[in-house]
Length: 407
Image 1 (cartoon, rainbow, N blue to C red):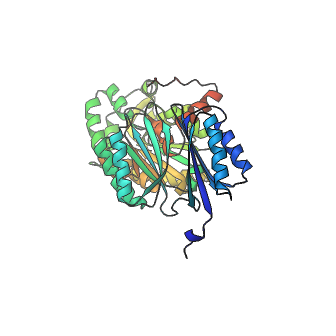
Image 2 (image 1 turned 90 degrees about the horizontal axis):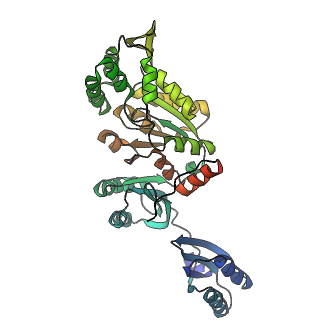
Image 3 (image 1 turned 60 degrees about the vertical axis):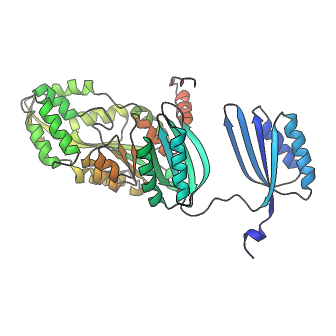
């Protein structure tokens, strides 16, 4: 005899209709009078329409409870369905993952494709939640029964085909703990490349931009290309660094992400193949805990065209992540790395979760997940934090967020 055969009889009660205050309370009061035990509750509200599901142990007199619930619900102008069965509502215990889908817009065809691929692998969607509706639409699926690695590969292909972003993460305790987020700077935390901005002042903007792109794609050795580019800056007045810093544009959502996650105890670090004269100021401005970058040599108020000390290259970025994690007391499995270029690959691989952000193809293919929207705070949706929670936290701190457009 199976465990299911020995399971107690249960009753699933589903209430639907136009929402109004007191619905849940009234239903639960009626259930209390029958002396049943609540096994599970789910409630969804969408555009004023309520769906309330309550799973309870079946009472001795099911007909009496059915009549009482029907009377209660109809008095509220709503409808009710009841279904007898057996057993609890436990999800499948194996291979539980969170699948986050982000689109601008998120079309029904894309959602259907993702749901279809989950089904193809034998996965079950246990729960669906909206994480954001503006400026992107973000939906999270709680999935069980599908192997995470196979699911990640299959959904990445489907995401590219449909022009959306999809992240697959194991459902474990790491999501709820304090984590360390380590970010690249140029074209990740900020828009553009600092070395190109400096090169414009030296008259070598186009030449440096071409070399930078080759290095970020992985076609050139990073350290050699960096030293060659820095040589072109020789003779620049150090005051140019202030001009460049003042011209920096932080990517949309960066301040919101740092501000929100710091409230939850998260730690932040930036690791850059750029220059400490810029990144140290940026870290102080944004409230970032640690920073590491190359240092431009300055003598008599002029850039010499050299860097001081060991270059922060691809391996150096990964090493910085490990050192910051140890220094801050955060397990490496609880680290998140965000980057866009080939010199970020080791760092992304070393992190518990590596995110390619508007990245080159070689980085997107290697990272755990990829985001291709111009809002850095969308990363919080991957952590299970909704837009509504972010806005509410800001409101408590006196920060007003513009209301989304009516749709």
